[in-house]
Length: 194
Image 1 (spheres, one colour):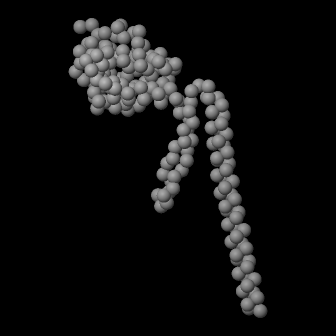
Image 2: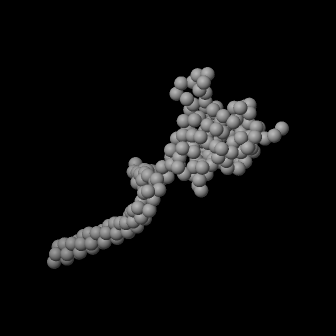
Image 3: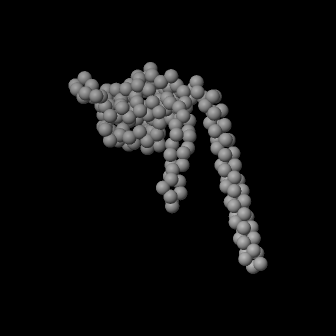
């Protein structure tokens, strides 16, 4: 009798644990699935609304639990023109493929692009302070022309705004006022009169 009771109690405990475990697992999966479905729906809606506007779907992987070596997947939509614009700036800093008397870098190689975005037709370029160096008026005009002509190839860019370390500056080299957004055609009007 004791053996039968023990077996019955043990069977009931195992059944409760199994049913409880299944319930918890399903609840977690349902919650995760609902979140995944909502995220997926948002992503699909955003994709369909922005596919023609030049966005690219990127999958990023981040660290998960600190106890386990796991990664968490996150999908993001990124503006492809912003990605290309930042690459253009990186290439301008890198300089020409072959440096010669007729082709020289426009900025010191230590210059970094701290941030790049495009909003309302303006390419906002945040550079490190190495972009401000002692330069002639001709050099500064060349820097501004190189940046504006290179970036205005992008459909969404009509003007540029250059900041240094997140701060508006009057000039990179003291010869052209760049405190406001400007286009490639406006550069000559930016010259500071001495």
